[in-house]
Length: 66
Picture 1 (spheres, rainbow, N blue to C red):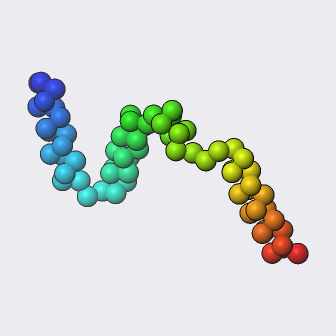
Picture 2 (cartoon, one colour; picture 1 turned 30 degrees about the vertical axis):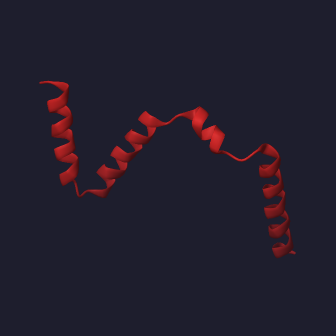
């Protein structure tokens, strides 16, 4: 069986799926296969901004609990 035939069969099978858990599993496989750590890091926020946001949230929670 050629690779193209295998791909077509898988695509045809996926297009008929209704089971959400199977679809979520396939989505996870796709995400893991295409995940690029370096690109995702570029999308992140700088450490200083993360620190500021964390402190802001902590202060808000502290005020609510007081």
